[in-house]
Image 1 (tube, protein in one colour):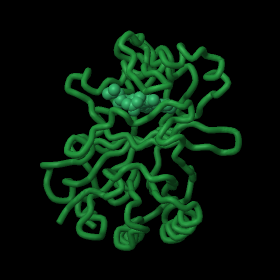
Image 2 (image 1 turned 45 degrees about the vertical axis):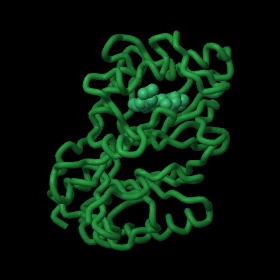
Image 3 (image 1 turned 180 degrees about the vertical axis):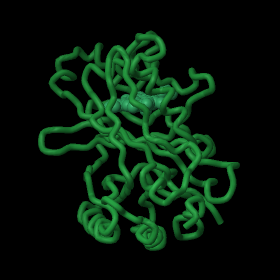
Image 4 (image 1 turned 60 degrees about the vertical axis):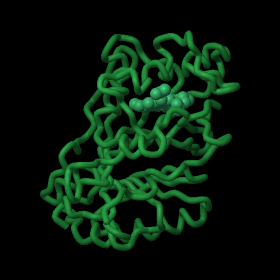
Length: 293
Ligand code: HEM
């Protein structure tokens, strides 16, 4: 039976770890990917393949491409293509480390580990600015409809496209804003998470209101805070049945549609931007049939 990788639809875990890989020169990832597909590393980690890996297999996944360079009056967003993404979920840092070591070793002949980003739950699902994140995520059947490919045939049904961006917060800039300006930047009240009826058009939730797009632009966000020494921010993760909804939201955020820039950019900026395709499952293993594997 075909289904999606379970971690996509499961509720956020207390901890997460992102492993980001690049292909080694001349890599032939076929056998390594088959091993990864068989030996899934724990029951709810998620594997995503970048466009370069799919090309290296002389295959194509309809709708998979690198992010476009996007800029608007307020921001220019980085594009950082990557070949393989493993999103480990768990509750124990030691377990995550040991699972990471196994994966890095298993793929080392073809993939070079480029980045490790540890994520954690803060304040019961808040961004490090203190705002509750994920409130308007679609639930149940709607989450499945937003995030999982359906009706496209074997090998594709059950798969998902994921956009991953590491955002670096400027905490000084954020702290220097009044609490009213902070609430207006998000469009919700930090104290009780109420949506502000009179939030300015630049507020983040006005920019991204999923029902306000034509067609509606729903994604399933699974972002988590990250921290490294004194630096920190949000590791933004959005699953979709394609990249269309995410791209529509991002275009509005940078002001590419109407010249209004998302107020988030006053205190945070993405430092990476990568796209991956997350294959479906067939029983207990990843189904790589769409790649002829
Ligand atoms: C550091 C970066 C970001 C932070 C701190 C952040 C934070 C938030 C917060 C606090 C909310 C309100 C609660 C909720 O519904 O989740 C929200 C909503 C939302 N955000 Fe973000 N976000 C960030 C980046 C992004 C990006 C890059 C996108 C997509 C391109 C995005 C898409 C959305 C969407 C779709 C909603 C729900 C809007 C609605 O339908 O009401 N966010 N975000």
